[in-house]
Length: 280
View (cartoon, rainbow, N blue to C red):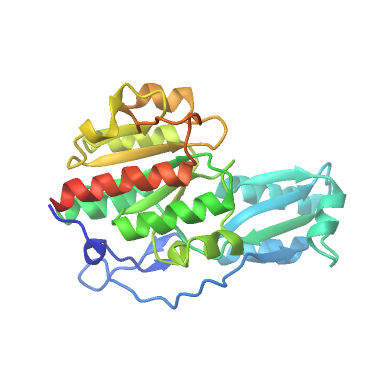
């Protein structure tokens, strides 16, 4: 099966939804892309509450430690219901983020819309194609994120999956590093990466962990199969939990003194091996 840029599914996104036409079929869409998109900051209790109610894609919420009051409790409850990433911080951090009257809470709005892994996977399967998704297990450097997504877009990856906590923020630097690919390639932000792996298994996807601890060469892996490729964090690699869930642990050959590659470089090698096998 040949995978090329034209074969990737297109989606219309509104918040967390995919629009359908009158016949119930998913419609394609065209988006204005700009590599200058940036994270928007919303400060103050009422503005943040209005933003939550609007259905906009919230990237993260920063709350002053020990923030009290009725409205603060309502906000915390709303944030919990929406399962949004939250970080409790000292007031000094909020002051550095905004010089307005933030009232102890700031929300950042992502410049991109996130998709459901389950929805995208089902979409690819319905189209009769072999899914190829890339999971980033807590990659925290924005430039690595951007570089990986740039290569993923070029190599025909269906989507990139990241955790909703402990992952690089999609900001202006990340988008610039991706040459705008973050505005084109579907991104999935999931609460539990193990749940993603389990769902992928239900669709008979091969779980391939890219690790220097791998027992087989990446060249011996059959990437023509539906595949979920896992890339690990820059410092710690793939978590033990995800390693144990993988079907195959593959490594790249290294003959020099330095015993590891940058994660974006390694990801590029793996992704283009998938493309090579599927194109040939």
